[in-house]
Length: 205
Image (cartoon, rainbow, N blue to C red; front, side):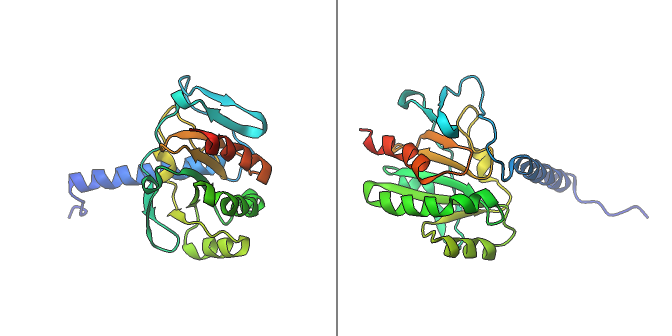
């Protein structure tokens, strides 16, 4: 008797899913909790590499952010596109990541200080296999802005080729009021460095 086999279409879909997830995990593993990472993108990225690992893009060269949506750590729906018209600070983090812990209080403070100026912080929590450690992390560091729950890093892969995409954990990406990628850091951020990413965008007309 021959072994039971899944239908050809189903088997193909299963293999594709396994390969996609495997590639995601492998990519994240290479850069997880790095002290910096390298600036990436193709020759058409057109970013300016600044001091302290912060890269910026001139207004005329910015690329649209990908569609980023899902459920938060509190299991509520969130779509980053709903915040268009605000400056959005995206921070990719994990509760297991020491550099993420080092910068968490700085992010929480700047988020509070700039909220009235039209700045919205949103986290992307990744590689936490369940929500509980991430929720404890937020409570410990006073993080009161929402975080999308992205345990295998699917959202990170949506950033377009040639853009300032997240390549390490932590990564911080700032979107301008039109939802375009304006700045990126691949290192844990001090309060001063974080403000240097956000302040020029607040001043933009």
